[in-house]
Image (cartoon, rainbow, N blue to C red; front, side, top):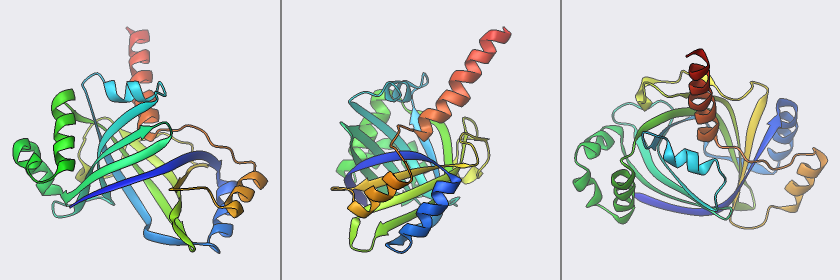
Length: 236
């Protein structure tokens, strides 16, 4: 099965104190969604030189990320999602194909059969072939997700305990690696098809919360690859 999403996304880095105040307010106006409390695990795919994320962190008008996602640590029969996440001028679109983890591994052995099934998988296959993509980074985080009682198209998520590693790149291996965000910080993300509700805008103003750019994969690449290479060069 394939799905398609398009929306505006804004990210904010907030403190634990701001998170607790926000959470108390929004739980009176919003409802936890189907993945309300979950640990999200991702494998990001890239070239051997990390060309996709190197391009992404330059903040271009247009950028793509390819990832495999699961909700909680998967087993062979668990549902996972192979996704293309595309951002153009602030608007995010996501194409994804649902499958079992063992199916994903089978498809990766025979990419031609993978592409026969639907258009999304054909697009994904194009990226894998054009860029010669390989597993590049594991990123996981604990998420609480809500949607507006009066408008399901307005969602707010809070991510914490962001863990990354650039080895053992299998979802089923579990959650371990380096924490790439301080323990007292959260990533809040607003996802909407239209305008942000006035009541939420007022809360952001009262708590002095401003949007900022933050990419989990980008930060993981910066900390685990760029800084590590820099330290290695200094030692040599």
